[in-house]
Length: 166
Image (cartoon, rainbow, N blue to C red; front, side):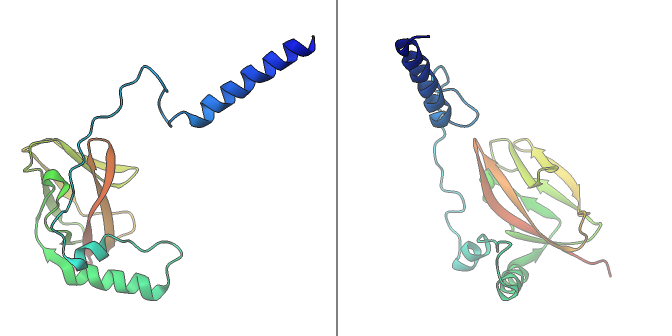
């Protein structure tokens, strides 16, 4: 192989690697339309406490920070059997239910929605429909956050506070 051939091969490899590095995850550089999602401000009328609640403690947070977040969730919790997820502006932001009870997820909006508690627990609710969900999570009573999808983004939305049966 001549030096010219070696230079051409190396140039092709470099261009290929450059394309792989710059390529958006899950998509092609060409031939694929860009998403045309209008950015709608979700939860645009949040109180300061609600905004603070959506800032979930991380695994590196102190016990004090975790406790403060939980206490804020308790303060904002509303005992109800209905969670409305219209436009991902959830109501109530913290739904309080008893362990093992059922609650209704209502989508009073005009677009289909799904909420995800984790990778294995995503609930799809068509526009104008409801879904009955049992408050029975693998870790028992506690505070469970969920996300609500907008056309191509996952948006933190609210919490379900599951209390022990009494």
